[in-house]
Length: 376
Image: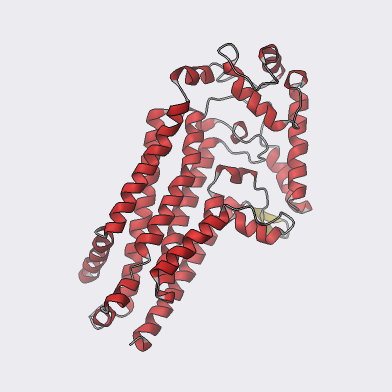
């Protein structure tokens, strides 16, 4: 057993000493620093103070009437006099039809328009009657009128999760796709399998080492981003409802709960990325092809190519990790389930990612055993 642990540690060291791994970790840190500091270039301390003026106010008729006389060009021009109301106007505009006069709209009309827009969006996405009933119960948990909170920091953190996931995907694609192919290319694979633990154990130890490196990188990257955002902007808006950022979302989430969901999605997605990179590199024996496949899938997930009428394909695409972790996934209302029993994609995706990871690891093991017999 001690020898297996030594081999496990050796495999981790081998991955970490790879120049590509070191370079990708440095690039990840630089990306996170840029992601954290970029809003500072557009958001001065005066602007931050203005956003906090209305913190804790209810977005009701009283606030809308107070804002109405200060609107310029229907809330598109902001000065020192009306700057504190900018986010309120953006939230109101997000609930109303385009070109609606904000000054003439009451809170009751605004929230009614929001409900109608959500139902229309769900029907466009071809939700079933069972799903619509499920969402009706879910929407009842979101209290209106909304309580306005300054949640700039938590929004920045949530948006930064997508970049963090992309970095984890690149680490998996570039650094783990060579874990097995390096042996085949250097012709050391036959030497390894002739050793004491070179048969069944070697494959799983290498896989465990790769999973450890990627999941540890994921946790450290998420922690670094959280610390940077907390220091630069604060995390005061964790209890804010997600509707302050995406008014047409039907989820009864706070920003804090959604960020925890994002972290769970990212952690399980990192397991999937690592499993895919290592298993596919063993199956097709070509690390460059694996890198191309992973980057290609990531790019495909960002393209709007599947119309909503192709419900199954559109939902499968929306459940890809890069889409599932995005803050825009809060507008994805298609559920997973049948027979009246439904769960959100946030509940289904992590389970699916882990099941796919197990299947990929098994497929890689079969390919590894087959090559051990017929590869030379």
